[in-house]
Amino acid sequence: MSLILKRLSGYAPHAASLVYGLVVAFVMVVTPESAAAQDLKVQDIRIGVHAGSTRFVVELNDSVEPRIFGLPDPFRVVIDLPEVDFDLPEERIGDGAGLISKLRYGLFRPGTSRFVLDLASPAKVTKQFILKPDGGKPWRLVLDIAPTTRADFIASMRPSAADTPKPVLAVPIPTTPRQNARPVVVVDAGHGGVDPGAIGVSGVYEKKIALDYAREVVRLLKASGKYEVVMTRNRDIFLPLRERVRISRAAGADLFLSMHANTHPKRSTRGFSVYTLSDRASDKEAAALAALENKSDVIGGVNLGNYSDDVQNILIDFAQAKTNELSVKFARDILVGQVKTSASLLTRPWRSAGFAVLKAPDVPSVLVELGYISNPREERLLVTRKHRQELSAAIVEAVDEYFKTTQSAAL
Image 1 (spheres, rainbow, N blue to C red):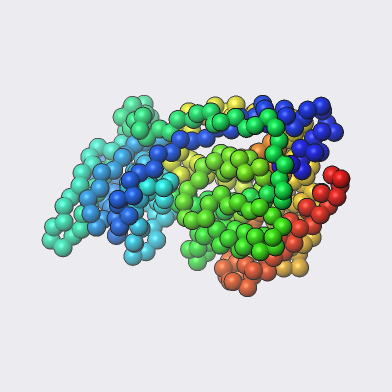
Image 2: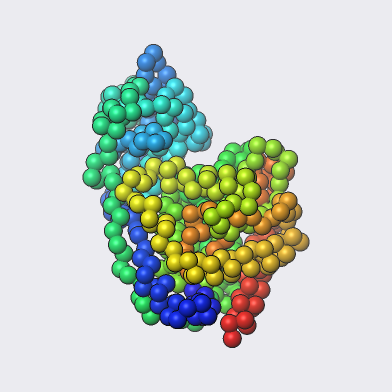
């Protein structure tokens, strides 16, 4: 961040102070659950379709007290449990039946695991109960779901105050800019927890590939001794998009890398690509990808009703313009050239669109698409240790080159 503050000084007097003093980060208040249920396990999941209703059953090794509520537009039923181990005979993410169009589950925040049931149409929970072990069967959480109207869904499934995180003002960022002794690089592993991201042809989750590559990039950056390095997540947990941006800004980041893997309806599509922020997408595919990525909070079952659209409109124009210039320099002029010897490139490998995770006004930020897990050959390549090491090394070389050129230009 110190790097961009130097460059901002040429745009307007006291630009750095304006950025720090006027931009206020919003955060979600999270109260961790008790860690007493660490040994709690989900052993199986079943969906039963009946005339006029759908039954959702979760088998567990102990009793639980769930919190159940609904979120509209799109319609979802959210089931929060204490933190559990999903000890399932097979992965069930994406499976749906009856009124449940899709199913997602995972760690939502420390102490809380979450199921998100995407609904085909408005429906409400008409019955919920716990069955004790009987006849060799384990504990069972049972929900019966039946069709309803939108108005009734909103009235009957409304989240309680305990289910609705409230946005509050964080401690204001100091008006005196922090001068980093070493450049700060924040590495963000996309998706996570209840949000699996894309699903590959073999069933591999984008969230796992993103975390594997993020860890390798972080390892190499730290080993160089040149940088302060921060990860937004280092385990399989859900993080809202705003929280990823907040972590980056709170760390005083000089560069933000968000790691992802892509999919495409055409299985022949493959190649590495990198995206920067733009209000106008470079093409329809970039716009569609940004729209999908920006739904991560919805997929995770976050109630966005408390957040004004103004939260994303607090960017200071001249600061954002200079930040974007540096983002493009890294993505288009450096990263693409470094990676081409280690991976195949997508046609037009640098693109731009309105990714929410790239919207820190004072941190050069890029979203890296490592390749396409919808392409069988590239998916197999992406999960290999050799390719992960080679591609991560190329990304780190690009980081080195970026800071060499930007630091010399700032002198």
